Image (cartoon, rainbow, N blue to C red; front, side):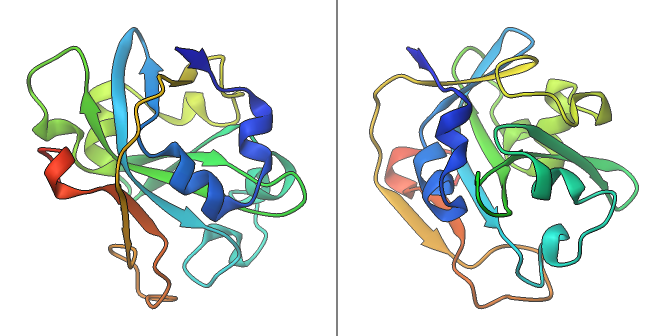
Length: 169
């Protein structure tokens, strides 16, 4: 497996989101396949719509981990993107490669809880606490509208492995 480097994340956010589908993530010796993501740029549903102390990481980095708390209880895992722009990709679902219980990894809050991801990961470079690999496996990628947002609902920036290829979707 080839480890992805920072340059992988330097490109346009939508391209990176699609290209993350099927990649392997490693956190604390746990490996899983990324099967669902959402892209966020400077649209109204994104933290980057307005630059704040929370969204600053999206403006100033690419190839970094961006973790934030939603509803006061769930952490969400994102990777910053675009060398010459602003963006991040939210990891929505993983398919474990080395365990049998798959349901706990089918939501951004659940997967962070299961993997022990919290604010201490925020700002770290990809490759330090979290590694991403390309094992060469290819999948049919579908897209749809993003889930659970109230603005910019028309943008089809959710990408996922087709139902036939994954048991979680």
